[in-house]
Every structure is written in structure tokens, then in C-alpha cells.
Image (cartoon, rainbow, N blue to C red; front, side):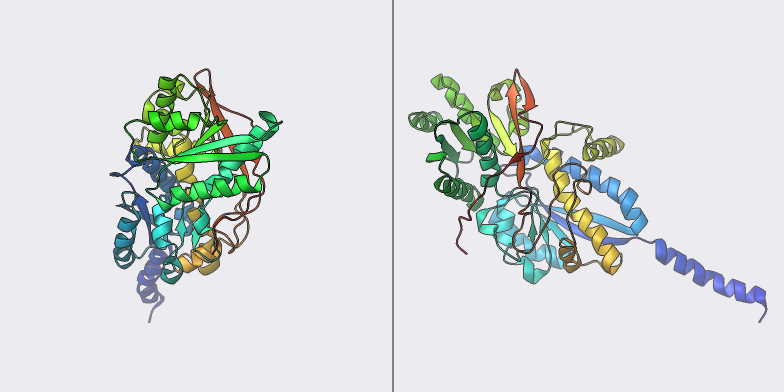
Length: 408
């Protein structure tokens, strides 16, 4: 056979091999959304950040690795029963290598299933006491909401109220086990911390018409702070009730209902004057953080108008954990062999540094003892002064030692 014929016979094979080498391996990642429940108002910016970060990764790192990530979303209405009933269909239809959860209902419904299903779940939220377990297949970028609240109270103890106990009250709802867990956690913290005193909780509906009676009862206990880590409706209703009563008791909020989100919900940042929020991540106020630059750039490319915010940080942190795990897994098992197990194993290969997380959180080190990094626990705190959101301090604030409050 002539050399010419050998060339023409071999050429198609070479083309097939070249095509195979560059053809992307596509993987599904499922995610919980809420367009019909209590967090419907924050879904558009939450989704926008995810789409921008996905476009960036697929176009840059994914393209180099020969991997394309496809996201499949489901409206779970922030309801554990909906999550539980939808999950078997997700497994059989989408065969995801990871799931991105929205909050407590996802953890409640899936925590015990995930080790058997071999699908790790990544969260944007803080952790819950009932999830503070080993080998859960849940990964969260922050400690519990009670931890994050304690970080603020630690700052207040060192800077505002040094000579007596800090008196803490709360407004909460029993609609979700995650909400109830927040109260159990802060009560446990106060029992173990001599410079705090817990006064009590007002349990309310998810979307109250008025909180005048509840706020009046709490005010009679003379709290220094009212902790609300549930939703923006609770924050706004509490502030409105205080105005009707002619009082001001500073409210401490979390990330998902904090100054940024409550401003979006109320359309009036001045309403939040003199109140605070506290959480273990960048507050989303600086557009020059590496993660912010990427999301802003790709949002423009995609025609997305939502601006960089606190919610963008939450959405981005959850996804960055997934993306880093995919990159690690690809290096370990190859781009065509990535599974949920490979992603799970990748999370324990070493710290996720601040650089890995694009400046959106301090370095995290995951172990199989907890769903969150138990090292370097710190928060950032913001408040509203003169109608503007400002950092209380540029430095990360230490979270004090914290006892477990759920017996396993």
C-alpha cells in the first residue's frame, strides 16, 4: 500500500481522536430555587450571579479542561416536602454530580439521603445545629447563623457594652426547622457565655400584617438588640412597629435578610438606620473584589442588569465551592470521569484559599467532622449611617468559642 493511501486512511482516525479530545464532557448540576415562596423577591439577582459565573467558568477554565457544566433548576418553594418529593425525579432524570441548595428545607429533606445517593450538596447559607454532623455530604461556606450572630455580639461586648451583660431578644418563626434551630443555637451560646443574657423569642408568621404587639412585649424586657435571621418581611415589620411605638432597638440581621436585602425589599435604606448585619463572607459592597469583577463583567456580556450585592456573594460562594471541586476532581480522575463521589473527595484535598474563592471569604478547610470549616471563624459587620451602608470595621471579627446545641 502506498504512503499516499496510508495517509488518507489515517486522516479520518486522527480527526476523530482530535474531535474526541476537545469535545466537552457535560455534567448536570441541579439547584433549588424559590420563585413562589418566601424568597421569591431575591431569586432574580441570585440567579443572575450564578449565570454570570457559569458563563465565565465554562468559557475559561471549563473550556481548557474540556468540561461544560449545565445547571438544572427546580422551584422548591422553600418547602422541605417539595424538595423531598422532587429529589427522586432529579436523580433519575438529571443524574447530577452535585446539587446546590437554597436553605434549611434542602438540608432537612436531603441531609440523610445524600451519602447513599452519592451527590454532594453545596449551600450558600450558614449552617444549622441539626446539620453539625460528620459525613453529611453537605458543604456550607459559613458556620451557623447563631455563630454569625455571636460574632457581632462579641464585637458589641468589646466595643459597646463592656461593663454588663448584653441583653438579647429575638423575633423568629416556627415555619422552618432551620429557623427554630437559630434560636436553639443563640440560647445555647448565651447559656455558655457569661457576658450575655437571653430574654426570649416572639414567634410569628412568615408574612406578618403587623408586629406591633410582639415588639411592644419585647421592648418591655429592655433588650439591647433584637436578633432577626429569618426574612426581610420580619425586619421591615419590626422597624415599622418600633416607629409606631416611638422606640429604637437595634436589630441584628443575617445575610439573606440583612441591610442589602431589606433595602431591596423596602426600597428605603434610611429605614435601616442604626441597625446591623453580620455574616462570614464579604458584604458585597466593593466592586473591585476579584469575584465581583468577574460577575460584573459577564453580567454585562449576558445583558444582565442586576448589580453586585450581598446576595451575589452568597450565590457566588456556593458556586465557587462547586467549581473548585470540579477542577480538583478533573485533575484527580480526569475530565470524563467526574462523579459526585469525586467532587466529595475533592473537598478534602486541602484548603480553599481566599484566592480560590476570589476574595469573597476567608480561607476554608473542610473536614468530614462538620459541613463547614471549623477554622478561622470570623464575620464582617455592616450598619447604616447617614443613609449609607458602611462596614463597622474593615477587619474580620472573631467568632468566640461555641458549644454544640444539638445532641446527635
